[in-house]
Length: 90
Image (cartoon, rainbow, N blue to C red):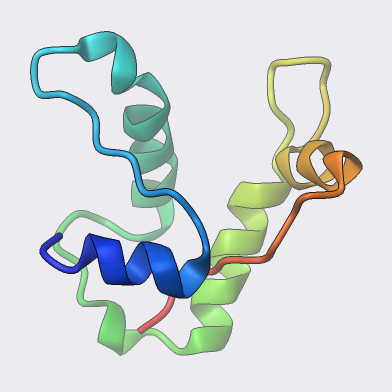
């Protein structure tokens, strides 16, 4: 991602990249990619989806039950009072 610094400023968020030879940094990303590929197979052209469809996919991922304390992801973050919605976009 060549423009990650500009994106980070625009979203007011940190963008972290895992080191190539540090598999312990990849776990969450790989798990999320696997879940995302259930709705969007690898190589899918996102422009064929409407923003509403992408928002629905993001909502399903953000509200699915997790293994930690059986909470839903979005609810866990909302309790922290720091949640700013970020969704997939075209």
